[in-house]
Image 1: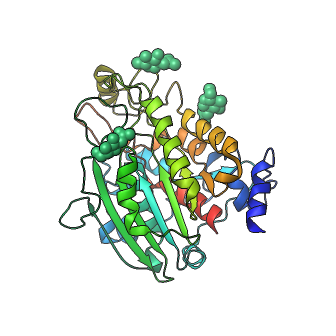
Image 2: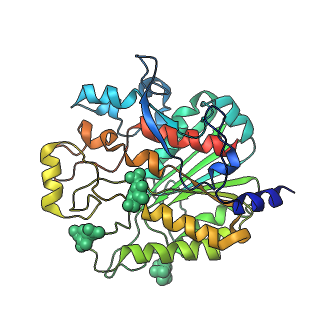
Length: 363
Ligand SMILES: *[C@@H]1O[C@H](CO)[C@@H](O)[C@H](O)[C@H]1NC(C)=O
Ligand SMILES: *[C@@H]1O[C@H](CO)[C@@H](O)[C@H](O)[C@H]1NC(C)=O
Ligand SMILES: *[C@@H]1O[C@H](CO)[C@@H](O)[C@H](O)[C@H]1NC(C)=O
């Protein structure tokens, strides 16, 4: 019955979300073309986000933080944190940690991707601090956690001796019994994926996977003689066809988010002179071109995949994130004094909203 409903929703064109003023429909959120909306200043003039990172984030969930570590453009920082995202067509249910914990009780949430997925996991750890029992988070190293160390994993399409970096491992447990895992690595490789998932087998319909690959496949990378965009499509096709579509788990592809490093078209190209100019200015700029191609490709792929992919949805954060070039770490001093101002990672005022969207889809 439920799977029939999912199939019906999938083929509704376009999937309906309710009118403004009504809560966003959790099923439809993952199937809609985009979650269009706008960032507006919160009605409370003192509003500065969901939590105070210094007080609310667990000691094991620390990262570079705009509020705590930012040392330039403080005024703009307060503006960046005063904004809330309002979708045009429906209202997101406000964040509620107890409800999140209850609705995911006894589930495993497995978050896989690059450093932006790590940011989302860290944000979730801060948002859920009050309902968390324990947690850990560290660099992916063999001594602490000997997972997927069997091989030097090779990235598709990159010639030479490039090996996929294994970045971070994390886990926290909620009072409700839910477990939230992080496995962060930049590029996809099927063998690496299987070695990581060995400990999670068997997957059941009680499991949730949130994944994203994109930032390590910069579309116009001038230093990569391969074609990262083609490699990304082949990697995602392999991942979905050979693995995700066969899992019992509920799965979300978190849209690739905008990176605004230099380059003529604004995307990450590794063109040093352009990145240096950005660093010199000390501010991240809007991309002349946006990076909607990743989300667009995924939508088309899932639509044509049909019922086989009915458990795979999209966490549609591309649109809301695209406009937030004002909320990159680099604007507040990360990368200052180097040629790569950090115009890739986001302040928690943005990544927290990704988790609110996840909450609205999951619960
Ligand atoms: C993934 O990594 C394994 C182990 O290094 C390698 O044998 C395989 O060819 C890689 N896959 C691709 C598509 O490069
Ligand atoms: C984007 O930039 C790259 C390299 O700088 C260039 O080769 C490519 O043609 C540009 N694409 C568009 C659509 O402008
Ligand atoms: C991104 O670019 C596409 C293609 O030009 C456009 O349709 C879309 O509206 C843009 N999205 C944003 C958020 O700017």
